[in-house]
Image 1 (tube, rainbow, N blue to C red):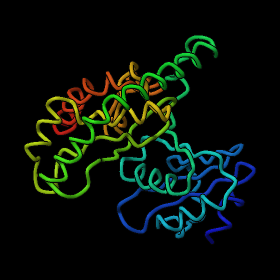
Image 2: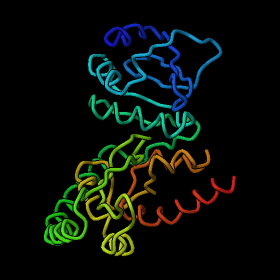
Image 3: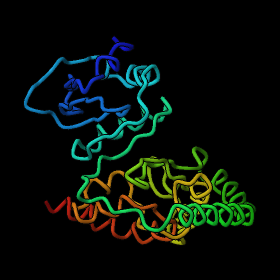
Image 4: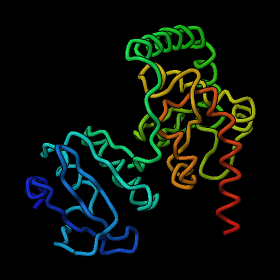
Length: 254
């Protein structure tokens, strides 16, 4: 069951999937030119594949499939998006939010200029990371002393062309509360310092468009989702945190 799912999706064949539990809604899987599209259900409901209800089974399906990337519809909800994102990460398959074509922005500049900007970002981020390494080491030691446990958080963020990636930040809260050090890191924005590593990996830029978490990206209006097509920047991630609070207030009001 786990190894036959992807071949059965070839030739634009579709399969509708749902969870036996209420955690995830119905959704449709569609194979198209090496891409696996995860979409809301169509009018025609097709075979249910219980193997995909478990993350381990889904990971094995993806690993043994010829899928090059997964594209998932943001309207399916945060729970299902995280479920697929975690599975794709373990299977080493890139996953993208499916942004409506009408909202995509054309690429700016020539290929050479884009390459040159990326190279400058990489060099600058690497230098800044080396310079900041003593500060990062001191913060790691302080965090380890004040609140033993995980030192970093790895949240899902939305990058260029809707690609999901893990942004690295200092952990500012424990399971119970925010620590004094976490409060200071958050207030000073030093919790974002490890994101220099994301720039080195090419997932972010030093200066770029707003960087949204997966949770907040699916709450954006269609107009604001245009920003999800651009490479996000560290400089914008700090101001986005304030806008994120407004999004949560709006959702609570609704």
